[in-house]
Length: 157
Image 1 (spheres, helix red, strand yellow):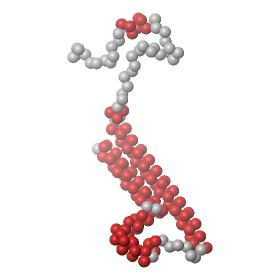
Image 2 (cartoon, helix red, strand yellow; image 1 turned 45 degrees about the vertical axis):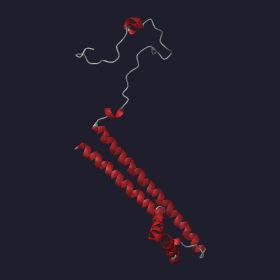
Image 3 (cartoon, helix red, strand yellow; image 1 turned 135 degrees about the horizontal axis):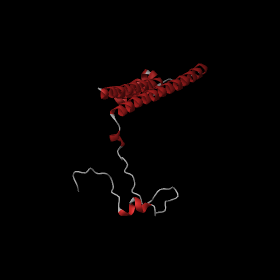
Image 4 (spheres, one colour; image 1 turned 180 degrees about the vertical axis):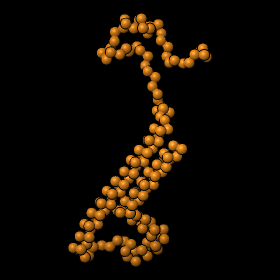
């Protein structure tokens, strides 16, 4: 191999020289099936610039922010509707059941069987429903989007 010459891709053989190409019949699409296929870049991450990467991070941050805040709004509104329906049902029926943590006896029983961790677990379970969940989704999406924006800004320096 000649070290002074750069690699120029696949070499043409005598069968595929321009003089012999006119004797071949092309396919219906007009392409030659015997032709050497093009070399494709199989790793697209190496072909993008830092500016494109920064732009991608910024767009990802915007998408996380929009999706997260949109989800939080949907969860908040759904819980608000459920609260209004339950208030209407409770005002109509005074004997509606209370939450399990509204009773001191229930809290004491949970504490006796499972300890303080059981009480904390039941209280934490209420954080994963309704409006507290909407707040968590909103805060996590804001923090994630802020992190993506900061990483994109640091790449520009």
